[in-house]
Image (cartoon, rainbow, N blue to C red; front, side, top):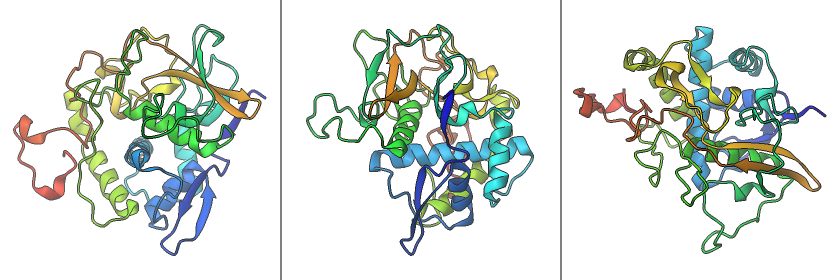
Length: 308
């Protein structure tokens, strides 16, 4: 099997409505239900995963809408599927969890130019690659989530790749560009019209679309790379701001998911350089949930948050 677990077509993600009905759907389905207001919460998302998962869905929706020349996210599953496929020029591999051909990307997993992961380290449980440090087992015990829990692998991947910092040691595990320091954290500051994720999603998508041109003025490129895992990464090369689109979705680790005897496993290795914007040391890369407009001479009214 060359690729498996396609998020565009397979119902791998849980959702729940305001009446506590619980179902599963695809990645396009999750975005459609968020936009329609049908989705009231993510029942499988743990507390530390909620903000990374929500920001990922918001960035993905804004980028897809901008590329398609649309502004209203209240679209059908089929419309979202077509727009997401458009971001990868029709390629399905970037949306699949497992892709055996290492020359091709997988979901949040850049191609590996060396063509093998034999010497890479392996993790057998999704919580062992997650943002939380569980190796010492002080507060959160390691290896509690089953290797065949596909949804937890998805959530762990997104949380790790979009919010992880520098892991220290001599290995060279770099963090994301959207934090002030490698031992900091990626923050999410904004205004929400209510306590549900749908209202905030709709508002934040509008904010991200409205800030698109300002980020181009800062140095981003309208047609730049938006999904950074689609490009091969050898752990040494990096992407400059002029190569990235506004609100690009980054990855910070070289890893690949593979089949194991009881589910999935993750092979991962070190890097010598941060993939995105290593020249920016203070995290000020235009992330709408963390930047400081007042520092740039703007005085936005409260409803204009996040950022713009």
